Length: 173
Image: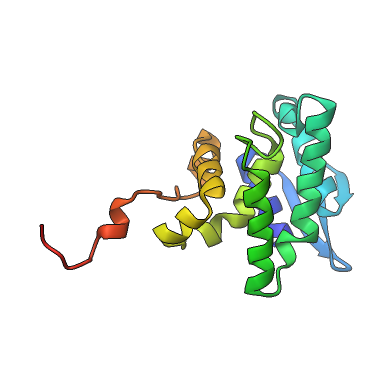
């Protein structure tokens, strides 16, 4: 999943020449001849390769630290959930962390939000409305993050409409 999310981040940042390979079970990112080994280094290499996107790393020392934390969390926990229970544990942690925050690193979008969103998108896209209600903070965060125009170009929007809960119930009013 590391290389898929890295590729999606490259598309999100509109970087044309990105080469992502696997060497010795580690992801290697090559942007303009500069190689980086590992997911966190690769993401930061992509962000730092274009001056207009450097704010996505965070604007304060705390935001940069939180960005690094969440990117590391992706590679150590989120990408390697062997069971449904492990994924549920990750989701519960994320749900709790988003309780009082608009974004993972505070009050502005960072590359950490983009990476976690891209990692979770295939799962959340298939959730029922009731499952989305179970994880209200994650759902709210997803709605906020997918409001970014660049994500809308590369990924289908996740719908959070309550009307889908009642569709097909067979009842007439």
